Length: 613
Image (cartoon, rainbow, N blue to C red; front, side, top):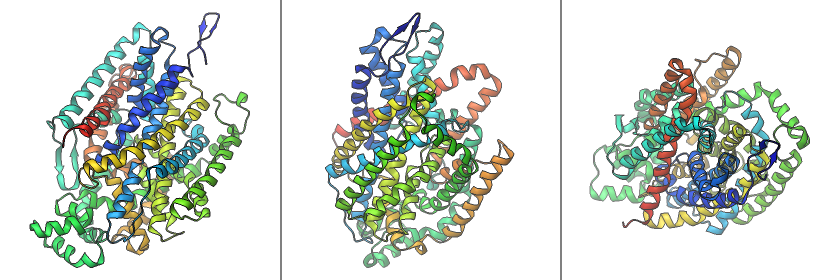
């Protein structure tokens, strides 16, 4: 859309050379810097607001004279960069292949070449982009779906591109928040001056110095924040019981039979291992044994809690969707209308289904060639990704945290019914995770676009090259990072480890689940259904949010507690100064998120990569 005048009305610029070139440049920078932080921490910081800041800076340099009309172009940059970074998150699947290769109990070796990674992830990613179109209106029309990052990005773009003098106070608040984020992240990660405050260190419960998490909490509801805090409390209260019941079973899962007796004897001893025993654990014990002996129990607990956590989120989300089936039907009806008849133009329904069908056929051929996966299993897995998107995007919309690995685990569990092959199960994890991460990131960007009155079709089409850029970043950066820092050493890649362990576990059958996990998983499913029905019928704002609660079971308390604190701050601020809250809360929170994300997600990883070891 060109810069056009109709009388006194000037329309904003959308697809311009600045938007296209800026999108490609900023997407590449962020996507190539993202794998380090993901492999280091297991999760990635928000990129959406950081991309908006960089996009605004780019437009200020290349189109400063049209400030006030650049916000749609900045939105395009933010969208492509968010999608590219989301795809770069899938380096965890590459890491899962690496961990599978290291797992002696699996006795299977899968090696995928970088060019194969680009093709495989790109196809899955573009399918995820297209499927997200189907659910866009359903989620954006739901008032419960906050999508905090998407909302914060829109507020950030409006403030940065505004020429209104009255916005200067908001711009100052954004600047202050960004500066605080810079300082906190640099002191914590760059200088190691801000240590976590730990309440129960072995269970990972405490509070990290993170204004990114605090800002995230300021953008979600108090109900979701308290529900997440409740999940952390459950881990604290029942952690010892779970460890006593299931820790040895979890540790033994990744140990080869030839070394099982010796490794378990070292673990059972409960004392600091001798140098010879430590070497045995390092070579043959697996990550669970290493974490257990080091007193890091949360990664072990996560392998138990992930089962009830997954099912309570799935049960709650699918029940909520089924109870609102009329909205789903209306969503497809609107998609089938001509573009001129709809308020928000996106790809036609025939284009979406035709594209998904063609790409699924191509993906099936590729996966058969690369992984010997039967064609029909690929097709069925893509069909199953639809319900998983409904779950994953719902959790993201409520908590601002995308449960990508849990959705990948869900498809792994379903895939176990089709095949006992460990490699095939890991391929299913890659499919489920990639399609879901694309849909989650697209929905955040659609939220931003709706607030800015952008054209959804433009955002959808320009997200496709973003998915490809992210795939190239994974293929290039993962081998480079692993060769420099080492998988499982400098790069813990806990999400990749979880995917690999799940594949190995499921190959042994559901009877291999950790002790006690099955009955509590079934109970969690019932609770998820009951909570969804109760919330729909009573509309009570104080019933626990099942999605927030479940997700907190598999995230460290150091992340959850500042989020809960942020939600309380936002709630208190709104109750006591509503107008002031509406004007400054989202802007200040956006600054917190952007400042910390820039340092932790871009500057420090790049400096660390090129620093001398």
